[in-house]
Length: 182
Image: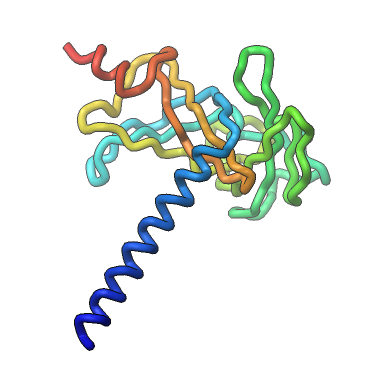
């Protein structure tokens, strides 16, 4: 009896892990791929290892793009939906924002985020939004790249984006860091 219970518990744990992996892989395989301009904030944390904290140009959304209108004092952790459209330089930019879910136009992507505390250097009359794309873990010793960072993000139908790849001066991060080592 105990052996059957042990096997059942192990089978359920394995099924749960495989289910989590399957959900993530499905989102990456079926989502729409977009390119975002990125700025590095803090490249290293001694307790967690090397990772990049990424800030995006789409992170500070002007209040005049919201429909219905909002003021700068939007409560922290409010769910926000952003419509992104490709600009002339291949990067996606915010064209509309709302605290209510809406259907984006055919050429737009709907990305979901949450309002966050405004940074000290944020533009006036804007809402700072976090999308869950702000961290990218990297190999030990490679957390301080020199060059322009861009991020390739996959946005599935749920609107919860996932980082697919970070690029340094147009090259994949791992490749750029190998070439940067002396």
